[in-house]
Every structure is written in structure tokens, then in C-alpha cells.
Length: 153
Figure: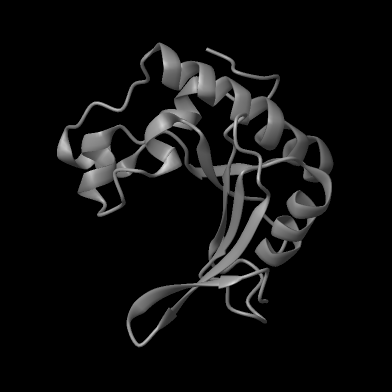
């Protein structure tokens, strides 16, 4: 099932964790509607600008989300978040383009290492009722994830 011209439901629900653990990762009606919106508002514009785009993670049903140790409140559980990369485009550049050109709830440049363009990934959430444009960088400090304001690259 196509959600947009270039993005399918399959790639927005694919989960290695779900496959490995035998967990269901298919959307209900609300999650499907949210996946369509994030595909239209975030993924497709990124693809139109940069070309082939890799979805690392989008929908994670609650059991899948818990299996990876993420918060029950994650936008991924509602189908409102995507972890994305574009081969050949530094993740810091991708994050900055999204911040400068798209509406969003949150952008997090996750675990990016300056000088290593393909390190980390870009997390983007899109909740139509909360387009607050929060921008953060996630990094490890003393073994713990720390969220810094802005894009720190």
C-alpha cells in the first residue's frame, strides 16, 4: 500500500525487532492515518529534495516500542514519528534542511558525530495539533542520553 508517491506502508512499519521477537507491528486506523500524514508532510518532501530516503523506524506498536526500551509516550507508538536518513547527505545537513523548510513537532539529531556525515540519524515527529518546532540534539554523556537544545553538530 502506497502512503505517498515514494513511501509504502511496508517501509513505515518494518521493524527488525518485531521480526526477531515475533511481534505484530501493523497500524490501527488512527496509526495508519498518522503514518499517511508524516509520509506526506516529512518523508515525501525530503525525498523530493534529496532523492532516495531511508526509513530506519516509523511505527512501533507498544510491544515493539517497549522491546527496544523506548518510552510509552513516544510519537512512534502513535505513527507520528520517523527516524530518517538520506544516503550521501550528512545527517546534520538533513536535520537543518527539515528545520528550515518543514513544519514539525520535534526534530532530534540523534547520536551524530561531527566529521562522520552518516553517523546517527534524524528523528522527526509530526503531530498536527502540536507543531511546536522543538529542535534538539541527542548525545551520550557518561553513558546516558542527554538532549541538548538546537542542532549541535
